[in-house]
Structures are given as structure tokens and as C-alpha cells.
Length: 375
Length: 156
Image (tube, rainbow over all chains, first blue to last red; front, side, top):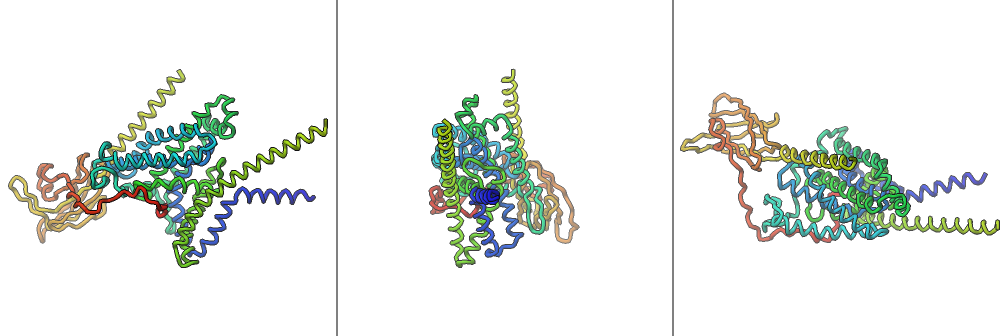
């Protein structure tokens, strides 16, 4: 009689424990939205724009998680590949949707090479993939700076002076993408009551989601899941673990490159030296806000995370300004929340792992005790 | 056999992607077309600017050009079409002309002189490449902000 409510209470507690971060964000947003005073139409408009801008990038994180490689901070590499492609396409003066498509095609070889390097290095650091990929992104950022700052315009031909630094080589701080700005967002855009729905962008994201769902069912997808669950068992089952892990990182890097191109076509300009620097961090934070963890993430987490994280981004500065009279409080708030969420998710993941280990240990001890009692 | 089929499929996919890239390269080439209503000197002859010229691109009025004025339009691809409603002299009846041009692939900016075009001159007389003036040397050279220690949050 007593067992049922206890079980229900336990399951509610489990739900709360497993969804601490999204619940916390829902509470923050529900407090901040009325204080900020933004109209529902404005918020919806902003959310849809930001969803279209960021969802593809966040989706690129799912496959490495599936392969048990954790949160791929190395997605920054794909972002850099996308930026390199956009610099070339801008110099070739290919505009509009053809420019976006060409940039995606050009980014693929860069992404594949960078993804391969990243995958190889991560295979050498099994169990420490996240910190390794984070440091790799810094390393490749240095190589990117070298290429963009010194080699482009001197060794790598760049024709247009609007892109080059006045000294004759190197790329300017900002490359204008005005001629492809929101070309995908505006095509087939639907306007309902002042809310612009970027239908084509959302359609591309929906197709990407379907592709991920399909991919999970393929042989390679199943292999990745097996590798993610237990590498040793997967190896014994004849799966080429290292190869599978490298492929997962390559796919993630290529998708991150595409995502970065979609992101930048929405923004309309490219901050050559800093656009990619925080992309990984914010995408990972958004995914974690959506309730994902280091070893489990779903498409639902991507969308919930993108909505909640960006809703907080929109309302926090205004709410901060209304409460304290200083909008900077809100700015600081959203910065520390981003990092805080990642820290909290990592700590919770470790705690969960330890709890699981402890419970397995307890079960073993119980089994041993029962066994000795029977003897 | 299976392996051969796999490689054939991969090769075919690569070819398709390259073909798409090549098509995008051609159809996506952007140009800026500058449309001038300026007096043109060619082979010792003078072709006077029009009193007024209304320029329509894509069904929308781009500009109403008086003498010595210029307007511009951007175009993706190599074909450019505009409608001109011209008044040669004060008091004249306006005439409508549809202009269809094939733009040279290699030129970013293209200057089209209306009086020269209307006079039926050869293309090199009324279509020239736009060359922007060299940038004045600024004392403060732009420094790439690669090592800024701030968190760029604005465009997220």
C-alpha cells in the first residue's frame, strides 16, 4: 500500500534529477519574460530566427555523442572550415544561394581533413575526448590564424581588396556577406502576424533531423551506438572501433561546417578571427540546457535547448536592466550561465557515473552475501 | 565486384558534387551594374546625355536619372535585363526600351552608358569595366583582432 506513492515519488525525483538544467532554465525564463516586457510576437520572431541560425550547428554534436565521444568541442574545426570556404566564395564573388551551396561544397574537403586529424588524435586520447577536442580546437585555431593572416593574399590567391588587409596580404577583420545575407532565410519565408518564419531554413533543419534518424538505423549508425556503449564489446563483435570513431568526428565536422555557413548567411558578415571561437561553447551549452548529457543526446534536446538557451539570451539583458537598472548585469548573467551550465552538466555526469558504479558495487556485494548465506 | 561498385558509386557522387559546384560557380557569379546617363565621346563623335531616364529592374523602379547621373544594380548570373523610359530632350515624348545584356563573367563591376547603347555603338563603347579608385592610405592600419580576450556575444 505504501509502496506505490513511494515509487511515484521516486520517479518524480528521478525526472527532476535527470532534467535539472531544463527545469532551471524554464524557471529562469518564466521569471524573466514578464519582467523584460517583450511582446510574444517579438519573442517568437527572435526564437525562430535564432533556431534557424543555430539548430544545424547544435545537431552536428549528436553523432559524436552517439559514438561515445562526448561533447565535440572540436566542432570549432568545422566552423573554421566553413569560414575558409566563405572567404573563398566571397573573393570569387559568388552570391546568393549558389554562394551558400558552393561554400558548403568547398568546406567539405577542409572539414574532412580537419575531422580526420581530430579523430586520429582523439583515438590516441580515449576517455579524455572532450578536453582533448577542446585543446585541438585551440591548436587548429592557431593554424587557421596563420593561414588567414599570412598565407591568404600572399601564397593563396585572394583578388579583392575589400577582403584583403591594406598591407596586401591577410584577410580583414570583417568580411561582408551582404550579398548572401539571409538568402536562405528569406526564400519561402512566411509572415504571420509580424512573425517571420524562415521556412526553407527550418525545412533544411528538419531534413537534417530525418537524416540523423535514418543514420542511426544504418549499419554505421548501429556500429557507432555499439562503440558508444562499450568499445571492447564492439571490437569483439568485429566493429572497427577506431575507424568508426574517426568517421563520427568527420561527419560532425562536416555538419558543423555547413551549420556555420548557414549561421553566417543569417548574420550577414564574417568576423574572420573570432566568429568560430565561441561557437562550440554556445552550441554545447544549448544542447545541455535541452537536457542532454555527455553520453546521451536526442533531437528533442537540440530544439528544447536552442529555444530555452536563446530565450534566456533574449530576455536576460532586458530583465537585468529592469531589475537593476544596468543592462550589463544581464549580459554578465548570460555569460556565466553558459559556462555554468556546462560545468554543472559535467559535474552531474560524473556524479551519475559514480552513483551507477556504487549501485553496481552494492548489488554485487548483496549478491555475494546472499550467495554465501545459501552455502 | 561489390568493392568496384562501391568505388564507382563514390566516384559518381564526387563527380555530381563537382558538377553542382561548377554550376553554382557560373550561375552564382555576382556583378554590380552601374547605369550611366552621361555624355559619351567615341571616335570623335559626341553622344549627348538624355534629359531624363527612368530605370526599371525586375519590375521595380531603380532610379530616375537626370543628365550626368548614375545608378547601380546588383545581379546574380550573366544575364541582365532592364527597362528604360527615356526622354531625350525637354518636352519630348518618353520612349520605352528594354535592354538585355550578357555580362562578362570576369568583371565585378560593369558600367553601361545609356546614350552610347541607344546610339547603337559597338559594345566596347558603352560597356566598360568599373575600376574602383585606390583606397587612400590610412595611417592607422587595420589590426586583425585575433587575440581579443573578450567574449563575442552580440551576434549569437
